[in-house]
Length: 320
Image (tube, rainbow, N blue to C red; front, side, top):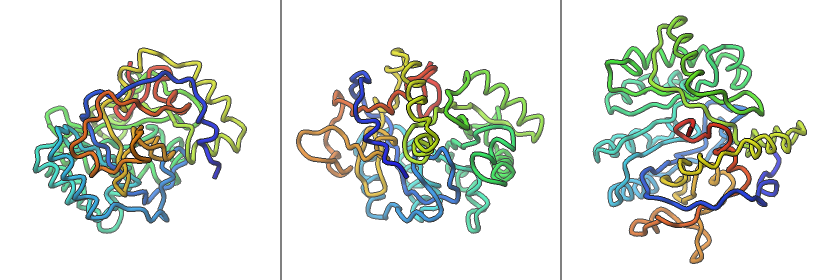
């Protein structure tokens, strides 16, 4: 695995600062039942990193004392953490909006078959990865059989009301390109997804989010191995759009790793770039219980062009 930070450190990406904190994105562990090529977390079945009950308590204390609107839970496959359900239930008990970033296939893992019902009972928004509506493309990126398992997962969620026009249960899908390309126009691709999934399987969903692949971790290493890294970076830099800077997720979000340490975004977490501070090398969530981050500079590197290229890319899809 190639180290990406030396290739990304020197940058002319524009300086940006934090706004009001609205979302806490919690990476609850790197263990996953899949090992996808594009994964910026390098998640997989053999990863052991997982958030402890003590750190979960710190997270819950933080979202209680701060005016946090959204608790965004990710991984790995977040459902594999034994404290996942307790975190979800208690955050919902505080009337926080909770998002589960689900890979869909985990819903078929032994012992997790009742997960769709749990999520529905707690009115959790699901953001599910489905990098294409075609089986061959999904299996090429995520492994043989993943597409079929993903469709079955979507059908289980849909049967509970997820994604239906008359339901409050939100189901959003995520697309990312198979290779070193920018995503197509989000609205047009969403229409294709809705038509194909409805016609083929009777599945409905709310929105499609198109994300650019980040040139870090497993995907970045693959680019280096194939001699495509600099070409891909040139594509991202050449497609940079200043208008996207106002909407990048790091302005209103912090990323928390499984140990409770805090970063500007999930990508910086994977590159081990901590929050900016002249006071200490890195911040833990418990250090920020009574500290306001608004106005702080955001640490940037060349990978940040992945969020501002073309129509933009964030945890909520396209920016423009």
